[in-house]
Image 1 (tube, rainbow, N blue to C red):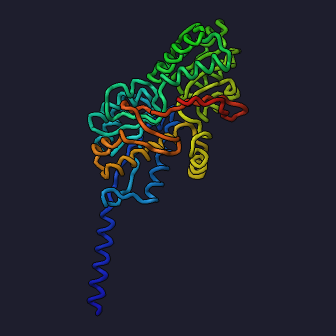
Image 2 (tube, rainbow, N blue to C red):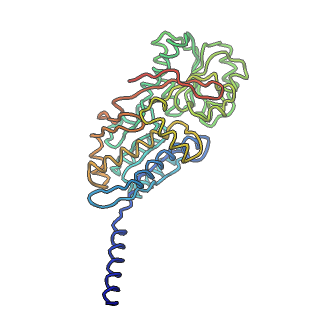
Image 3 (spheres, rainbow, N blue to C red):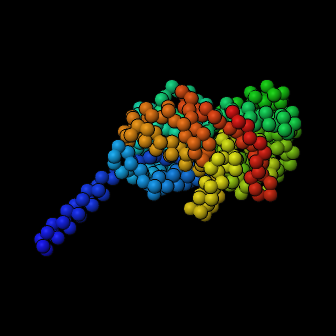
Length: 376
């Protein structure tokens, strides 16, 4: 009898070990700037992706009869195009099943060729430059609207709701900032707004007083800034210090929670857009915000809900394909019809959203306040 018990115990342990070995570890990449001036936006995005990964693992995931454990392969591209391609190659070498990223248009576009060559789906949680999905790659997707939609939305709101007649435009010379400014300029002229001047700085600048002093002499109704909050905040603060009367118009790169700290009291002078539905209007927005703050003990910035849903979309494609093979997951992507935190997500043949939205915000007394939502 002792021998029998020992044999059964060994068999049970062998079965348990076999079950544990049956778990497949599948990596999903995430790329954003985790160092530098945009690190807070990148970490916010990573937090959203990690929240999705943890929830899926807790619920249990089975693909093709095998239990799967997801692992987030989080990488830092520092917002730098060259680093972005190196990170993309690392993720391809890591055999990720899909990638959420990159955050910036200027990093997403050069990295996209690496993912295309590797046959790995890339879903950007934030890249808005239209060129990202206009390269003819079957691997490129995004869960936000484009600057071809965001620029006109800002111009339309400025003309219609703010009565802006004249504007000066400044951009940070990146793919995102310049692209958004170009789109805004074209739409502003079409809306009857006179563009008084156009200037460029860079995404590392800290002193904008020379440009702003000249713009002050033009006395525009508004100044449109194409760039991120790391530069947009100081830009707005210095504009107020110099006595510019016009509002500061900008896009999603500036429309963060941290811009309140970066611009100080001058944040109240910002009117900005987000290339998606406002959190308070998202179907799952309130619950997501609650979970995010409970987990990370801080409010989200901008992109966390989008990276969260991007992970869920990749996993849904895995389920449809009944495979963790990146090629099969990629083939399942066009059939996406996901109902998640940000709402309904389905894609055009190019990988853009079929049902997008642009949300307009301002800041009042240290709070981000929704002004309007334009459904596309």
